[in-house]
Length: 207
Image (cartoon, rainbow, N blue to C red; front, side, top):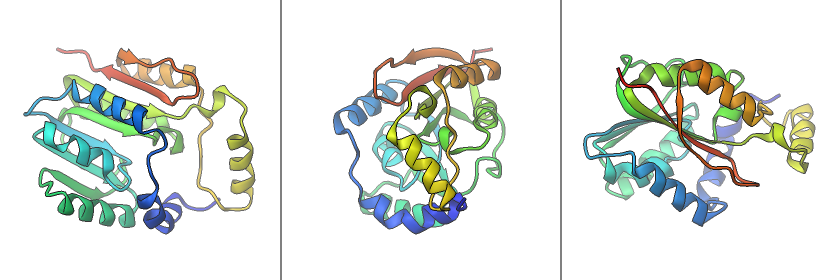
């Protein structure tokens, strides 16, 4: 199995040029998330890729810190932010585990299309909970490949055997929801739409 960082470094340029799969759904997710922002919001995104989502959200918040394990992805993200005259997004190359910041630093944590790429998504959810202020929200869109048998699952198995793909966690939605509950989160909003990733917004209880 190829290392995730090597896989994404090699595909950063191609990834940056790939259009969003469903523009209408993506736009709706952006607008739904922005309802949880205000001009003082401190936001953290891990697995930010080439920064598209962070850059879209930047005008609605005070600051966003966005991380990714791929230095190539982060390099592209910084160029995109500069080209868009976005100055309140800080892009860092880091794993979630190595990201150093005080507990309860953020009003919003975002994890889009990343939890199913982690070997320990439950740990990532626990870290997200810790980084949030009381009353803060965790926004995630996660592919739950364990809920349906599809050609994608077969392809992933073959690609991993051939060392052409990084680790992919075949998550089920019920497992994901258990991880959220175990961490202490309360569900505030969730989509139940067929053929869509599990888009869920969770709250950390206020003190």
